Length: 620
Image (cartoon, rainbow, N blue to C red):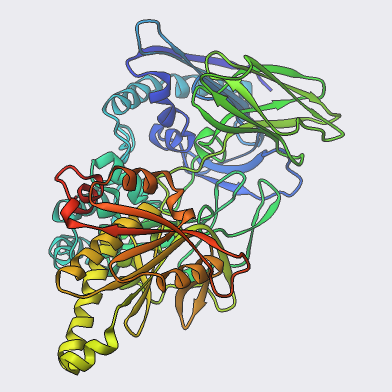
């Protein structure tokens, strides 16, 4: 083996380390954008602590094969890794990225490479190759993107991916704008989606996230998601359900339908089996329809901080080793754990309370600190120690899931999803728990008398109009109608305040035409099941909501104390000038408690004002 060649790039950038981190830490994207060849993973059950094996073909025919040590990083300041080659022109490659905030703003970035040629004769060739690689230009390109807050896609200035269209793909793409508009997509968003499919590179298009695009484009999340769903029904996009590991949160499989989701999924990196959870473990993503544009499913890096954005710190410690790392700067709940041990230490970062330093050790007895401890937000330090007889991969994780994910629990409670994809349901006999869902039951007051007084045809028309009113307000508030039973409706919402707004407005509209609408709602855990090839919900929360509807007079909404306990609901109702809230207790048939605390929410137009918070929500 030859001695290491050393390469270093040091430059000052305008963006802060926090702004640059999403670009710099995405080593899969970075390797693609610099022009490296794609890689192929090699499965090996003996690899520990997230070591990976991979192979790569360079210069068209030279095979490289290596074992990659786990990346180590401290977000947003540095990361490093080592590749140990068993085949090819290299012996090993070590890289280190450091970013230091400058006093006047901006970042000093230093990127270092130590490259060991396998043969001495290759030194001049390898030295020339790395010196001519445009790392500095790429880092400045990322700096420009960070300053513009551009994340919709990254087009490399050095690598031009040539889109692979089918024979009539371009023609079909050009026809999509009119097709999407006919189906109700927002015209501006439809044009954005079509342009994205036409211009973005394969890496970006392999995993389209509507909420992320909405945030970057500056459009409401709901309208971009609706446009993506319409685009799927029109043949522009295909949707898939990504099954995420609850520990490392990486995608472990993608299925085309909810029916394909099994009861358990295995994560080879974490060595765990887990049950798919609608709220966190099942995410809806999109990619172009292969009848328009075909993608290369390629990979350019097997590790890197970009694959685990919720992990703030990852460090590999040998037996007896100790390290100090900065604590998180953002308030919230966190966890320190190692990859191979059970349990861990939970701690909360608080800008007002907590200790300045937290010492955490891993031991062979697997003893961790009990309970949740507090670390001060400003200049908090965490000391991690490996007091075991084996190496340990430590991770400090932020215990919050990315809010840009369109989860199965989220999208299946939207009316447009039910309308366009009514056949999407679980496999028969599969049950998936959703921890928080607001369930609503409605029924027309005096519908039997209405048929008698008005006659069948006029009364039936009134019932159909009532369904239209409910559907409109439920859809406006991101809810969905699960089923209708005669004149009754069962609907679900992800947020309790959305349910309250939708129902008070629907009740108000029905009251204006002299029709009473009884409403009851409760929030809590539900079980999602496949019933008659449609997604349905069961459980105590559903049963209680059905009971509450019977206490409504048709001029009020009955809510449980669990609904009222939601801060957004309580805040809206307390600030409202046209809604009266009256607490009462009642017995519920089939429920064990002697009485339950309920609230009667009564709408009064006489109390309405122009600045009312609930009215503003409903009219926006």
